[in-house]
Image 1 (tube, rainbow, N blue to C red):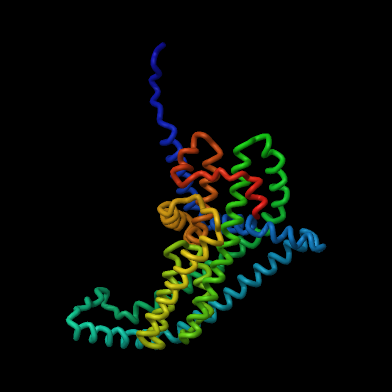
Image 2: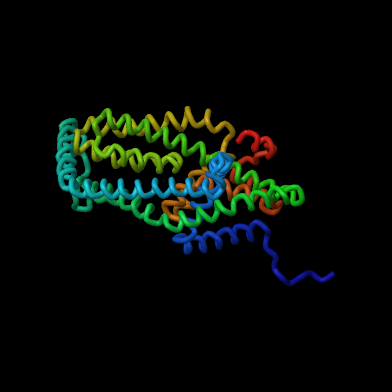
Length: 351
């Protein structure tokens, strides 16, 4: 039998090429895709809340209305808080910069007297001149994130309306299609489990951090707590963002020791939550290796921007579950982390 003259490519190469093409398309459409994915994760997470409210006699439409009004109120509060804090920080930028330069000069003198040489900045700008714009850029990014929420709110409403029908459809065909729809069911459970508990631990982290900052007398305690809550969804490295900003402001306002204690407080609270509280609360693991969690932050941040970093873990969990639905991509799911063999009914009973 004559050999075919057409060149064949291994299946893994086709899969990798397809993932790369999809990632490039998603990056170009990130302005629309990021709020839609955020709405999807929000809808999946809040379905149990909507169902619980609907069973209280207010109906499904009333339950969705209550959830969305609450969400809109939170977003409006965040926008007002960020706007007020941005205005106050802008007014204090020169004062904070001058105090920071003075503190840095004092530190340089002490280090020089101890025989330690401190390199000068190569940009020609002082530490204080650089710190102010960086802090304002952080708050500006938070404000722009809140400004993109209109599409997110509308998409969340429609996704919550269609959630019951989609869930019923999955349950009806799950027995017929086998593993494919079982994996999708697991996907919904995993995302709901992770986001629900992560929200609670993020809130606890923010509250403990705010208490510590209030004791130290650090200005803008609420805004640092809000940043701590949001960035805690970014594993491992997210907490460094509010820690740096708050430490700079504390150093400029209250002195070097206060700035150091502020940064230490962020680190201690985050370490306590990550290594003591979360392992006990989450129980079963995420099914992702730590290396891939870090890589997912970079990849999803590159594709979707700040929202991608916030949703890096649940989005990677979704991708892994979808890869488990086919024998051709099962190897890639194993590459991302260990496969979960827990029975779906068992997971449902633990919700």
